[in-house]
Structure formats: C-alpha cells, structure tokens
Length: 135
Image (tube, rainbow, N blue to C red):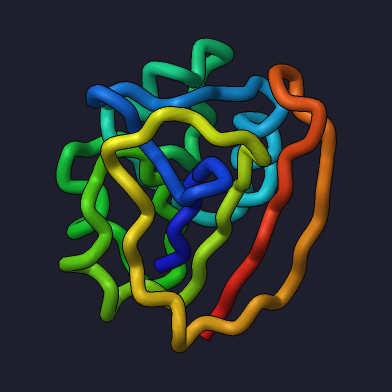
C-alpha cells in the first residue's frame, strides 16, 4: 500500500487529537492522484471531504488492515508502525510551516527512495510540497 500523510516542517501530524491544517486543493489532488485505485481512510479523515467522496474511496476504522498491496491510504491520526511491512510507497505533503504537534510521522524511511518532489499552491497555504517515495 501507499500511504498519504500531511506533515509540518517537524513532521508533526496532529495536535490535541486534531489535524494541524487542511487544504481544499490538496484534497482534490489526492482524489485525482488515486483515481483508478482504491483510496482508504477512516471516518475522521472522511469528514474533511465536504465536497463528497467519489466511488473509489472506502471508509473504515480498520482501513490500514483492509488495504491491499496496490491501494492508497490517507492517514491523519493512525499509527503506521504496525503496518510498516505492508507499505510500498509514501506520499508526504509538507505544509512548510511549523505547527504545535503531539503526534508525529514516525515511520522508518531508510528503505525508501525519493522518486519525485514538487511544489504547488494550496487554498490555505502558499506552498505545499509533495514528496513521493518508493521502495
């Protein structure tokens, strides 16, 4: 599976059980990137897609366990460590800001190779950086 995670400059993901930020253009980009594949997320993440979820999106609290080898998982508030062996790719979206955080992205990325990097403007952030990693 390929995990999609949003992080700040210090790899923070959550503060006080809440996402640090969200972005409408980023949500559209995630949906477009995963079109033609299954995109899994939990109910917490699904709530931010106010525009509606297309048919290729599946919502379950056990989404990381249910995801198949070619599926994508949008992860905001779940621990990825138990699923490290299932992960074949990582897409990190960097907010390029520092926010307060008490939950951080903590996967061991030493086996992953950076494949692509791109900046794009968001709706709430002047610049969002996309990093794509693969085994």
